[in-house]
Image 1 (cartoon, rainbow, N blue to C red):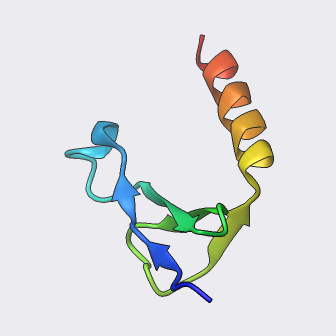
Image 2: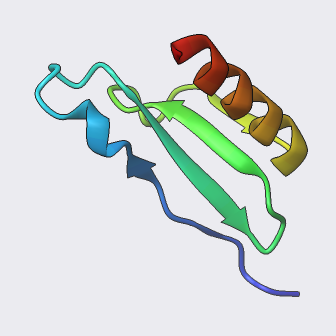
Image 3: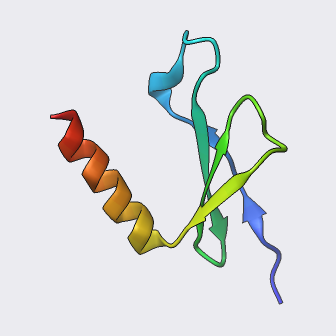
Length: 65
């Protein structure tokens, strides 16, 4: 059985706002998308399936236009 790896990253759009942003990660090899508060990295982590994350991201993109 392989080791799960998680690499967190913040959006490049999150600079200079006092840290009020989220971080996302893809858990490999499982493929879940993880989301957490960048100010509370030991707090709650949300987990999305790749399909659910894609639908969510598409809705955000449409709402922004």
